[in-house]
Amino acid sequence: MASGLIGLLFRRVSFYSFGLFNWCLFLVLFVKNGTFFKKDTEQDKLQFAIARDNFWNLTKAPLPGFKHYFYTLRNDLKLHYSSNREKASRGNLVIFLHGFPDSSMMWRHLMQEPAMPVQDTTFVCVDLPGYGGSDSFKKFDTEVLEALTEFVVGMRDRYITAETFEETSTFIVGHDWGCVLGFRLAAEASSLADRFILTNAPHVELAFANKDRILGSASKIFKQFKESPKRNFSCLSKALHVLKPLMVQTMLMGYIFAFHLPAAFVRYLGVAGNFSFIRGANWSGYGKGSKEYRVQECMASSLGPGPEECRTSIPAVNGTTEINGHRMGETYGPTVLQRAKSPQEAFWNMTGYYRDGVGWSPWAKSLEAITDLYALETSASESSSPGRRRSSSISNSLFADQHKGSLHAPTYVIWGEKDQACSRPLCLDGLGDYLGKDSEITILPRSGHWTPVQKDARPALAIAIALFAGRDAKPVPKMTTEVQKVYDGAVLMAKK
Image (cartoon, rainbow, N blue to C red; front, top):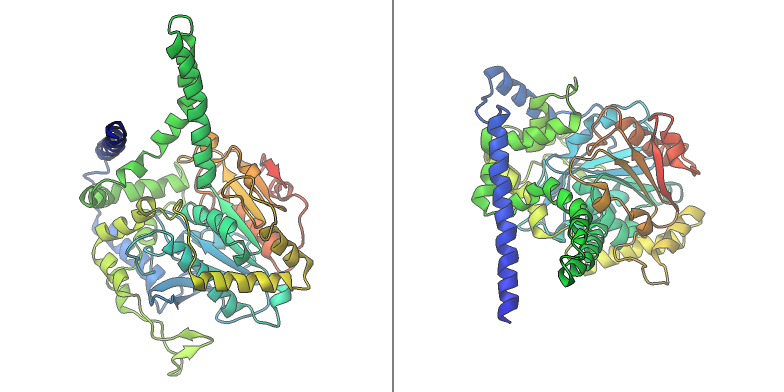
């Protein structure tokens, strides 16, 4: 009993000590690279205000051809999204889930790619709870999964009619936290979409399995060293070599440990040195020397609406208060205004995903979520479309999962190999074992974590979305082959 408590205390102290070390390390780096004491000029402040107004003013188009909308959840909180459609129309539905530290506006570059089927397809770019223009939750646990399930069902009801159901498919595209959530939905709520398209973030169950495998192997080797240190001295270096990928991944994700520190530390990290942490994350998305990187535009995307934008509302048309299911006159919720007034509060909400367990906590679905998913599953199984029936049969497998977290929906993963946060040994190796039928993994060897943003990587994602979800979409034997036409050197990692 006492030894167990001592072990628990040691682990807690080690965890928070490493978090504090990383917190201090970030501050030192901010000072060293010169950003800590750098202040915005009046021109910078003006550019930031203009970018914020362009992105978040509800009377304006956030992107060419897009408009602002809100979806009110059953808990009365609102999710903000933008879409290129006001009402249901022929064409597939694609829902985009962004990551940290960003918002739905992170997709602005991808939407400009020539291959994107903007004219033929309904695009919905939603702000995750606590980000952009969406309301904050008290805790970012599996309530986020509940909200996204309700939102996706709501978008399907809004943009897909009974007449077009048979010929219309739904896709979920996710990056970073959107990818983590996408993996969970593909495993535990697979009927939400006909296919998931995911980029650069861990499948949490795979990462845990890889961690346990590495620790187990290192422990066995280290035991041989302990039994006979002199004779098996080389086992010590072998054990450390086996542990190296885990140690590297721990250092790469040191910021996560810092996000678990007391609120005062986390809030300060978010604003220290004129938002050096957020600026650094945004800069890494574009790469050194990128001509597309605009600091104030990226900051406006990350921080969401300001107080001025929170005073705007979706304009009514000829006095009409509701059009095609969209309520006119709606404004951002009160929690969005709180974040607008306090950047520290905004950063605390963003980092809540790392603390509150949405990526790994067991999801006991609500009765409403179960009902919604059952209705989608039933519709798919009764469909006359062979593809939709096949998708339903995948998610209704009679056999136990080979791996915890196995995906039950067709999933296409496109991965920048030079990921700055997610190493291959922990976050990618073995992912093929978790895939369902009609799934594939493509590696982009010259790209990093920000595949939807980087200039060389986003055409690959755009062509995949176009071929899967465009007007003339048809089964693609091998998506990697198509990606190679726009990204020389793309590699097929796994296909089922």
